[in-house]
Amino acid sequence: MHKELLSATAVILTFIAFFPYIRSILQGKTKPHVFSWVIWGSTTFVVFLAQLADKGGAGAWPIGVSGVITLFVAFLAYRKKSDSTISKIDWLFLIMAMTSLPFWYLTADPLWAVLILTTVDVIGFGPTFRKAYCFPHDERLTFYLIFVVRNFIAVAALEHYSLTTVLFPVATAVACLLFILMVAYRRRMLATRQRG
Image (cartoon, rainbow, N blue to C red; front, side, top):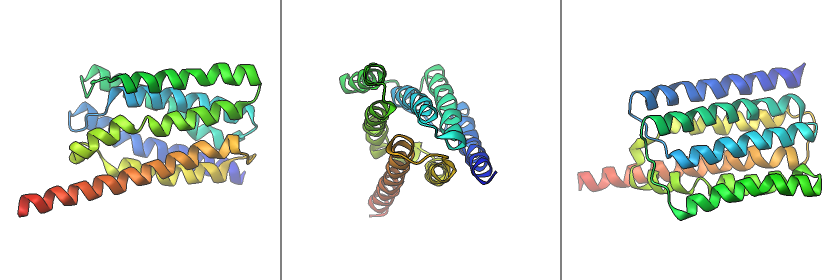
């Protein structure tokens, strides 16, 4: 019962994080990078399947819900004509993400998929880091902060701890935290320049 309650809390935090972010996209205030969100949605959902395969149980559900909503954000970003610049490196990230499935199939071990997908997901942050570095006010930091907390709660909700079940949520939480620090730093730098 304790694990299910933690999982439910993490799912609720997922909705709390995404609701204002999606509303902000619809209002044209937030302009997410389409390709980052396609990559994140794909990788997150496959990691959810890998966590289930490795008996992650209730702790896997927040990741699955997040994967579905993330793909919806990608759809909105495309539909709203958000940042859709796609570079060769973006295509490389997507291809790398898709290679995880054959590795999982060939090795019959979900860990290989999770290792590849976690790497791709964190590297896939690249276009968003690049965009936010140039335009630090285009992102909502509360969204990423909620995801840091949500991911650690999801880890606590896992019914089986292994590298397969823990790696992705922890790595994603750390990437979100680094993103928050970078954007906050850039906002402060730009404010200092405007005052000076």
